[in-house]
Length: 262
Image (cartoon, rainbow, N blue to C red):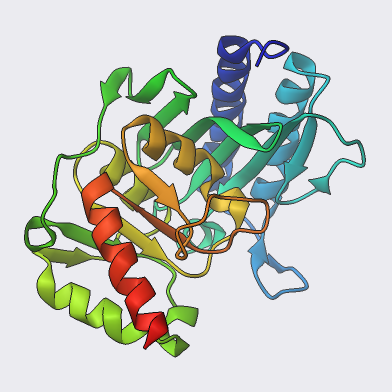
């Protein structure tokens, strides 16, 4: 960390998220045409312009870092520092006029996620965190709940299509029966709730690392545990999430492992 001014980098990420928010608000009011990428996911001019606005600020603030963005890919250069950017996570929500979309900006240093900013400009929430600096919601430091028992826990599931073909699907049904409450907030929203004590566990089986990198830093700095569904740490190839309070995460992970063993 000696070569990284973390407060400076965090401020740059917050500034970049604010610049993206201005772009997104503009197109939210104006409306956009929707195109389809090669994988049939939607993209708009708002996605592209927001990423360009973010890149300009991040490159100026930290020229020694590479950038990996949802719309323009990863720079050819290899550096110890890697910005991870999803300018409009939730494009489907954006084009359908629902506020569940956000800008996600994270920084990885030597393979470790060290800061994250999650900005949802229409929904009206911003959270950020940095390694050792805690998690913050609109200027107030936040923490996960102290929930320890599954029977008292509130769970939320987001993208879980592939889980339905997995041996863990039945285990998930049993978990639903054994918990206090089940919800499906999705996108940034349930991670924000987890980090500030409104939920106790989030499960997703179908995500992209750019969707969750910033949120992982926020949840961890709020005292939570954030892994993939196998309990492994996040990498650039991560595509699933199990995040929760320490006790609830451990309980659910154990039951999911048991389901795979048959």
